[in-house]
Length: 234
Image (cartoon, rainbow, N blue to C red; front, top):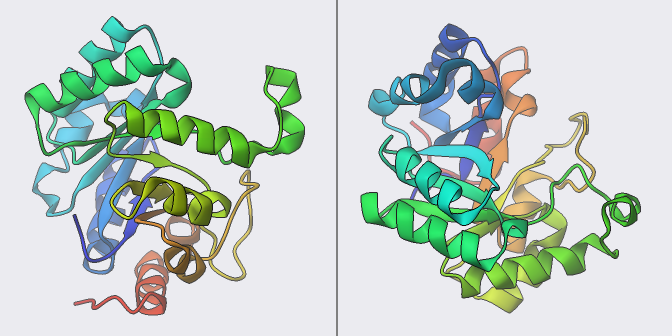
């Protein structure tokens, strides 16, 4: 998909700022992630505003509903020309299969991936939602189900990369958020790793937000991460 695995998370409601930021970091990244915060403010037109940016778009809306509703949402999202979209694996097998069929019917090249467990959750959080720790076992179970349902990959934390890569093979996409370069604040992420370590472990794509977007010089922050990954930049 891209030789540079870094997707910058444009988690903002400010459209002008998002476009400005995307232009500043564009030479040093591999793609853009647009999530719920952005989409709630600007909808499909906001996504279409990035069509000419020359970068693949990961539309991170984490669809989780009955199969028919998710299928309709995936068809609509695929029409926006995005490269990646996602659903919640906990929606179940029928929902995930419906999502893949719907998205691919519109855009066969669009990758459909599944969220396993949010990276803000730790082992201590699982019993309150009826799940049994450890998180890593839940992630592996859901990722295996997603693969069986024909999805292209999963979202997982850096701590699950090695196990998932070994279990699910070299071609399954592992999209990893919560990446924190050395010296970055953890924020609300509990299961983090640095960019180089995540790639060495077998990550396919890295989603990086605040360490770039909140940096005094986002372009410099993006370039430093790219250089740390030995990515050839313009």
